[in-house]
Length: 321
Image 1 (cartoon, rainbow, N blue to C red):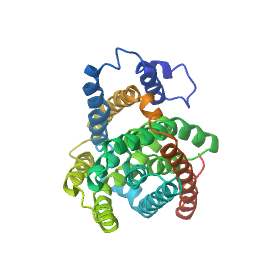
Image 2: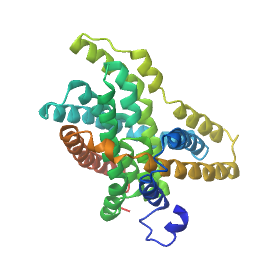
Image 3: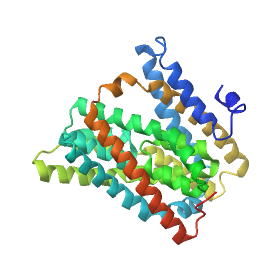
Image 4: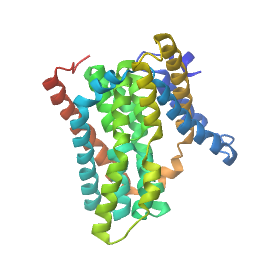
């Protein structure tokens, strides 16, 4: 349905955007909101997306991944640290509880909801804090899915620059995939690699958070449980298929077929993401975390695109499309 509708709309409105919008609208129907459907929606939103990303590894060789990731590694690390500092600073100004502040910060800096869930046991967060942080990440990430491609087209950003921007500045993996694939295939490839690098950095960052939290509060959370959730196995799967592609075990024809399957899985997953959005959860967050999320999203988005523009000019990347 999303692909059919996309054929009748301007090119800036992609099938991905339509799939999420359909999910948002259909998700308001009482039958879809049934508790019985929730496990299936979670499988579609999480496992389909991750499996689709794994299959995309067949398209990119290790050399291509290194060509994207290595030059951008410094800016990825710098912006992750900056995002942590910015959101923690805003949380302190807004007098947000310490545990919730940490969850908001890791959600913005690392990989959205996955980082929030992995960090929660490490700092002994309350279920309410975890739910609030996830709702905030979901809200501003969903806004970014629609806003970033529009801003990128209006600014005439090149594919590589937009891929870097969306891969670094947008929170959750599903949201990065949605925004970048809505922009262009080239932006999608760059953003996927950048986001997987961020995901891979979650485990070492979690160890740092555990150490800092214990030093600050004297409390020791369940770091082992957090690390189990922080190890992104789908990143490993992506790299395995990429390695097979590099040594010729996967030829161009098979890679193209796997890419088609991957894109279909991702489209289904992103429609399920729209179905899973609950407006009542967002209303329950309250003003302070939302203000922190809003301020953090704006500062991180602007600072990241400025840093990427300078990085791109210094490294000969095309800033404009």
